[in-house]
Amino acid sequence: GQNQLKNQLIELATKIPIIQLYSREHELLPFITTIVKMEADNLVAEESISDHQNNRKNKHKTVFNHPIPQPMFTYPPIDSLVEFKNVNVHYQSRPILQNINWHIQKGEFWQLIGPNGSGKTTLLTMITGDNPKAFGQDITIFGRKKGSGESVWSIKDKIGYYTASMMDLFSGSHTVQHMVISGLNDSIGLYQRATDLQKGLADEWLMLINLIHLKNAPFLSLPPAQQRLVLMARALIKHPPLLILDEPSTGLDDDGAELLNTLINKVALESNTAILYVSHHEEKTLLPQFTFKLITGDEGSKGIISTHIV
Image 1 (spheres, rainbow, N blue to C red):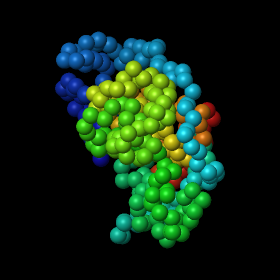
Image 2: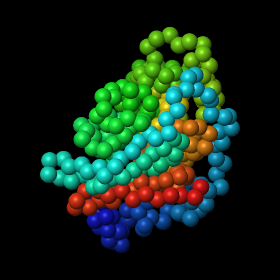
Image 3: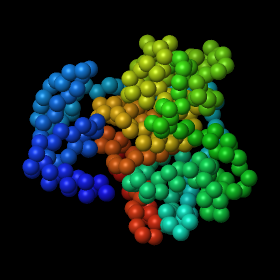
């Protein structure tokens, strides 16, 4: 596995020079001593690990000064969003999840952590309605028992969803503004004329994320970190009761991930949307209230809940 490869590289580093390409500091191998940045086609700014980390800490952080825009409509109040009671999942004869008990309530900020194969995706698809393994289990979604006749659409309508792999869905010349507006209809891009009210609301979100000056630019022309901010605005424009962020910082560097996490923290503070942030590891700049950690084992993954003082 990864640990075995890491140990082999550590041993190899005692014999030959090794160059590591990385995007996040937590990926750095322990024998790396010097950082060289790539800008355009040039290698620049060689610095030691300690200098690099100090420079990042002292770097000016982008502040989102505007308040979270209010929604065009509000959902009926829902206090209990997701509840798993003693949930067990097997695929054929292989156990995936063991005795999962988890309750997500209105406005809570959760981080779901677990390695590949631990069952994170299984949990998510049982929430969103795409996994038949949910039926027959004691699972309640938005106040209704799973399997009681709810439609997948009625569930997804109340969920804002974002994953880095969504980028594969977008093509063409959709503008930044149109991408934000499309969150009102859960569509990929915008295929009908937007109203002035919709445009105005989208512009409020673009002011919040400091991209109003690019509202008519092609979405795909933006750098990755800015694209993530736009997709966050798209997922949040309806103020869904639940926002699921599935590995949202994949492919971003540390500055981009910190920018995204700063916006997520702000949304958690200023809205009633519950947030479920899914990742392989803890994010240093993220401020969740709770962590649900999947611990793998021969009988399937168990869940451990931690509460954080923020």
